[in-house]
Length: 247
Image (cartoon, rainbow, N blue to C red; front, side, top):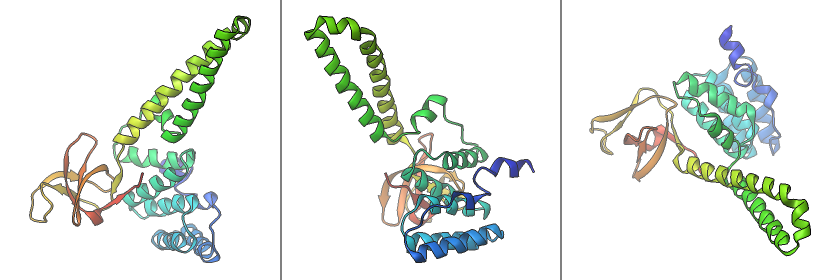
């Protein structure tokens, strides 16, 4: 019962997150997927949500609900991958963030700090725009104050406040860039796998990785990718064992 209450915000109530799906075929598949999900047929629902994406085009709502169906079907890695793709398209969605945070907690992933979590609510591009606007506005006001001393007396406090905001926005942009460069860009989607020392099946396992582990792809070689975990430990995985999240 407690588990049900924890998940009710998103994972169990997928039909509340319906989004417009372009194309009649995509909408029909989406409606059938919602019916399957409501009936507890989560594997069938996941297949139909995939079809909705294929026939109707990318949709945050479909990706979100696909993640819900995958999670309920026991496919934690594919659920996280779907939610990550939805979050990439719509960074501000709280339901997506809630599901990701819950799934990561179940895997033992430490929660982000308050500052990091707040910065991650906005993509680096938005931080860059806000910082640029604040910087140019602040610069223009400083130049105006230097040319007109009387104006400077009236604007002294607003200019100081804008300066502080500009510094915070620049700091936020720097942190967002650092997070983006170091964030995992792939998700392991198979159970009981292990990254190997080399890109061959005969190579010994160098790093155990579970379903849902988020890693960063460092190198590619044929049908293999070399990944790094959060601690910087690495190894090779078959390409079909990970889902990469494009930047």
